[in-house]
Length: 132
Image 1 (cartoon, rainbow, N blue to C red):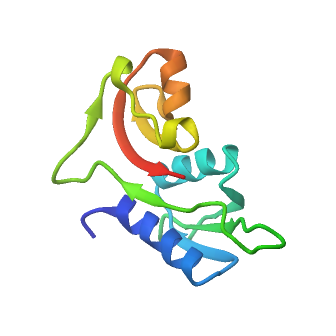
Image 2: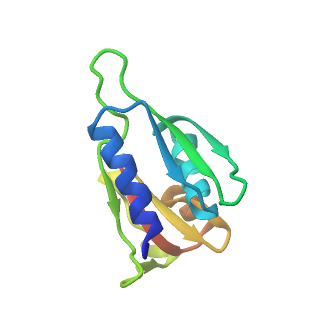
């Protein structure tokens, strides 16, 4: 697999379209950090990291849906930076997703965070994905 983050986002997208409540994804440290950001911002209901004996483990994510209308909390996931074309941004030109309604997940020197947190710390980094 050449792009594990794209695989992570695709598994989430497919589970949302199929209206699954729980999705299992092979774990990595970057995927764990992205999952924590999505949980902190309210896009997923809960998550659990399960360690494997010979593997890195599995991330179990409980997706969030509206109780009455059954619409998912995540409407769209877009991969921005890819292994073939990395997208980096400076602190003064951080992207705004849907005029501030969505988030951009960045990998910075201080860890994985949203565009709003990076703007507050005045640091830039690699734009991993947009979520709204």
